[in-house]
Image (cartoon, rainbow, N blue to C red; front, side, top):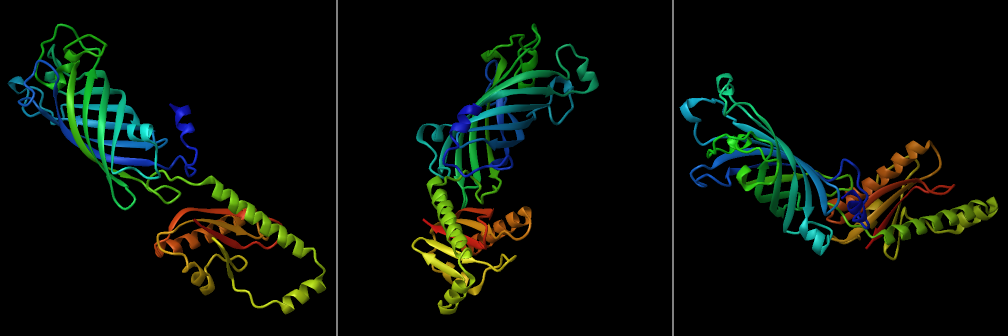
Amino acid sequence: MTVSANAQTKGLAQSKFTDNWYIGIQGGVSTKTTHTSWFKNLNPNAGLRIGKNISPIFGLAIEGNAYFSNKPYKNGIGGTVVRAVNTNLLGTVNLMNLFAGYQGEPRAFEITALYGFGWLHTFGTKSFRNDSHFGRRNRMTSKAALDFQFNFGDDKQYQFFIEPSMNWIFLGFPGCSQTASVYDLGWSSDQPTYNINNSFFQLNAGFIYKFNNSYGSHNFKLVDLRDQAEIDALNARINQLQDELARKPKEVIKEVVKEAPVVKEVNVAENLVFVTFAQGKSALTKDAKAALDEIKEGTHVQIVGTASPEGSAELNQKLSQARADNTAEYLKSRGVIVDESTGKGVQGTTSNRLAIVYVK
């Protein structure tokens, strides 16, 4: 699964470990698959899910569900509000992205398969525990489910899902009675297999929130790697020209400066906008904002910030990132879509205090 997930990252914005996490709540009903009256013996449950999407296709999640009862145990024994808890570690596969590919953002409707193993613990009072058929038990479980997901929000950061699932409980005790309660499943069979007599069906619904990522999106983002290479090549050319100018005699430089017209702090070349900064500064000037205002709302851009050689490497890296981020924030406030904003630190050996905006 890990190898396959890595193969899917081509063309995606580079992710950190802290990216693509989500949290959700869920609740629903469950009932034994056999030896029960389904609707009469439905039992409620509620839980929490935390997960991480490794790629647009594969992910991992851990969830914990608390199970309640719609009626007390026979003769009133038991006495706990939560009758059982089940914790699962699940692998997830987004079937829509697996078969149809990822298009840069989640679809409005998706289907995800889940499968994994867990641990079930049942509760009871001390007197309840001494009964030969009941008590506090620990059992291995397994879950297989399908999530029917509906994504919404400006960046599809919210998700509502409906989840039918089959759950199996392994390693019970033989010779115990078959009852209608989900919480008796761990005592009804000694088969460590996927057996319908040792399982329960569950129907849950829930909400998920996807946390914001380091690259400014709540979901995976596709990037055109060729565009970044073009920006790097252009940046190298700028450095080369600056190096050539630095090697010219001082008299020539003075003459060029004397005769050259006043140059604004921002230059536009075809689909590139260059924003220059004062030494050690990352704030945008009026000229910079005026040029950035020419970029139309809804346009996709990529931004690269750079710094000059003065100062430490760490300081210059932070400064170049701040220049890129300030440019990105200003463009976002005007409705421009920033696909990537990266600080490249020092580029070359001469002054290079820039933010380069590539307009797609």
